[in-house]
Image (cartoon, rainbow, N blue to C red; front, side, top):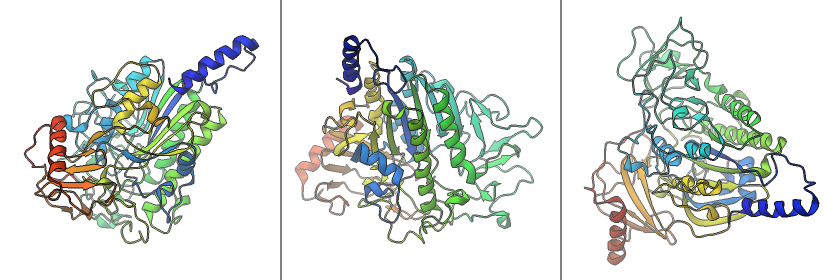
Length: 515
């Protein structure tokens, strides 16, 4: 039985014996636990000091890792952002939805309003639900009027409060949206957005490089906002446009305000950080903190934000009754569209740690990410080698709050997340830009995939090869020794298990999506 329910029964018995002299406050274990998911953006397995980083220090993430369960085999569902977020909120593998790809800022809502979601499940159990930060799951029907109410969106799939950016920091529209309305919108300066063609007279990074404070490397040469050129074109909304350097603080304050507003009721908060995704724009107080340029500095900034959020929970007496889950949407990337010294100043730092690949890759570093569960007084500190996936959070958290709702791809691993069991999932399919791979036990199978083996723009091995790849992670964590030829029986077994879930594929893959 779940720890908090066990403690609740013990508390009830003690109350009968002692006339219930214990104070009834929101920190008491008998009240349903709050749940906070902290979701970083492009944070790699080796980017956190708790996971072995020596050139960057992340004391607040480390505090969660030391006080909770640090998973060494924790996975996102995809090596890119929108698909991972889809899986997190729906409990379904993203490859089952052909539209679950990296989305433009004008993409329609990816999640059906009829679909069961994590926030909907929490709402049914009496929770208030909120999202603060990056959304990137589409809005409306693909023809959004940014000057009116924007729907459907987060509010229509279960979030009662939403303060978001529509897509990514490097995409237009560069505005915050609160509960379906652009913040600080001005009817006299209407916003227009296009991903097809520019608006007459609007400057772009390609044609107006003199306006840029951060030079683009590839793909990011359209509308210029705050001295940074973006993906896509935008006109209007001058007062509504964000200042990139203030984004981390803006989202942090909204997350803290959400906690303060709902501290007297159970709540689910999805706090979706934008760091260390490009453009990396640390607040001036963090510039130069690491000597690695903006990427290192925004990781330190993100860690500080996490510390401030934890401090808010603690000061309000909520930390003992809040399950915190920290992870990342996919693995790391250095040069992802801008010249920001991420690749030239990385030094001895290894964002992927001992793993091969990174963002966009089917190798381990694409989806094996930091994954930590923390609940003060309820979870004992531990390091777990159990295989867990973010897709499992749906069914596991449903079990936590007494709901019977489950999702087919989402395994109920609550005891594993609580550190009470080391029996994680046995099989897992991961995805990267439409391509899939398979883990079973200590073995990984990467089927044949067409396309180039390395993404030249980002200098990451994609895992593509014309033949099967088979690796034993216990003996070869860096996936250097392909055993497909020398282990034919194991290869045949893995192919059969993979195809039983995924079905037969033709071995091709779609054109690589960068960003």
